[in-house]
Image (cartoon, rainbow, N blue to C red; front, side):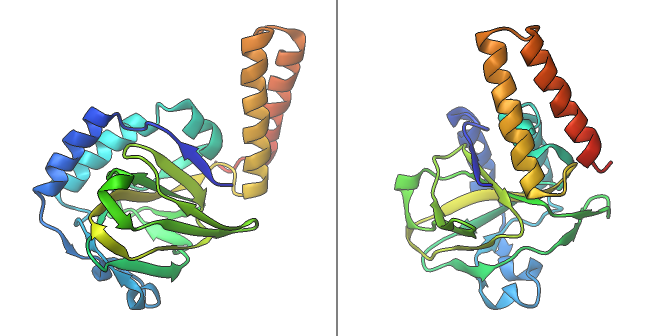
Length: 227
């Protein structure tokens, strides 16, 4: 399930974040790549333990965890600190699948990567190339969103960032462990929750049918959730 989460950051938020990132010291992204992805990863990355990365990461998480669409789609249990990367001319990240387990660099806590996230911090017209291409059951999905928007997709997906041919592509990327391990079950819960919200708007949250569906939603979470 690929879901676009619009306007996680406002345009003013993006300007503030970019001001810090543009002044930061970047390193070779291959330093954090695994043995396989190191062969296809050519980009720049902000050190995850730097003050800039930690400050901006906390800011993004505050925005993200107050977004109803994100919470409905992800049902997050644990979220890794946001990381930041940059692709300049000819830089790219070839086809790869993210590691199944990752360690929080700040707490050393290990978590399962159920969902991947990319928060775009460059406007599409500011660079050519640099599309995020995701392979899923419905074929290849090409993603290039406005600055401040985020794409949420299963971490099991084969994906790549195409070479940048003009300008600079800056983004934040990170992962989460969901309370619901199964992508299929998350999709069911997301569709059900969106229907409940639509019913609440049209016939009221206290209508008997809305209440009944809300009960079904929570009982499914009890059945499928891992705490």
